Image (cartoon, one colour):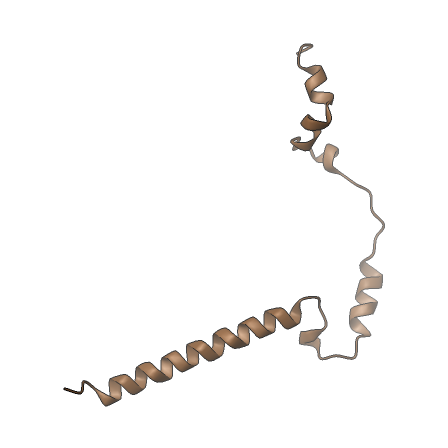
Length: 83
């Protein structure tokens, strides 16, 4: 173990440590100020959080594409084969 102790103390070894104490950082508690900022935002609730426009836009695009695919499939089944 004494032979490996320089390895454990190196910066390279600290990158790969999974010990919670090695990765722990004390940061100030910002929950209340984030909560106030989000609750005081005048936008609709679904647009208040970061990246919500991206998420809602992606959802809308996938929803429209799947709806069009369903309508096309139902139309094809109703129309039937054309020989």
